[in-house]
Amino acid sequence: MDDPDMPQPLSRVRSNASYSIGAHGWPALPKRPELAALAMEAIASWSNVEAELLAAYIQLMGGKDDRAAIAYLSLDTQNAKSRIITAVADAVLSELECKVLNAILRIAKTHQRKRDKLAHWVWGISDDLPDALLLANPKKMHSGFPDRSDIFVYTKRDFEEIIADNNRLAFMAGCFIGVIRRPPDVRESFQPLETLCRAPEIREILDLPDSPNQFQPLK
Image (cartoon, rainbow, N blue to C red; front, side, top):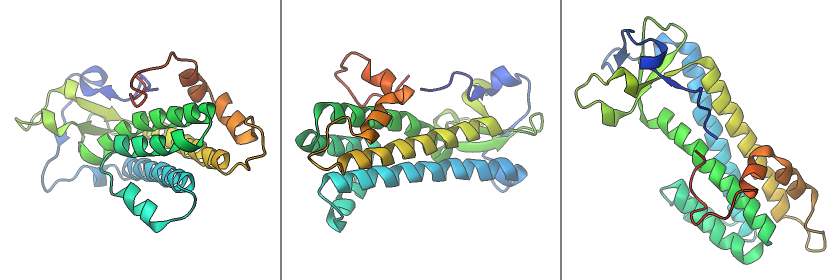
């Protein structure tokens, strides 16, 4: 789930702070090299999630097949990728396995939103916040000077939590590959499935009433 403590708008952290957002010829990231490295690692950690989901899809399709990988990677959005994985899973997995997979995909949708901000929003800094990077939605920058309530403050902790969340999600997706590879004569409570069902974030989703839109990200 999204942590309400991260990240906070600049208006709440330092309402009178000066800032620079998207200044051409004066890039923000080199001014905060350690945080810039963490931001890049946060983006890279999402790539590991996508790699595990791709491996799960290929396994669901029956094994390594370049055509299956090409078809999956050609899809533009995680929502489309999730739908094709689920469509195949419905045909070959048990009901519990499908529910666990849907939980993983729902968590992935939430984590993807965080990654997309890092990849597509506009970076900045504030001299009043030497231990932070700023990030603003480009849609809020029509005047060139977004309101401080539309600028978000990213600290070392914020990036580290994104990285940890993505690493955990990649682990869960990898665990699910073990479920798919389960021999047909092994009972449904095969250890990787038990492990996933015990994960708090998956258990929380499994305990929810059935939703008409299983791809909605967690709030």
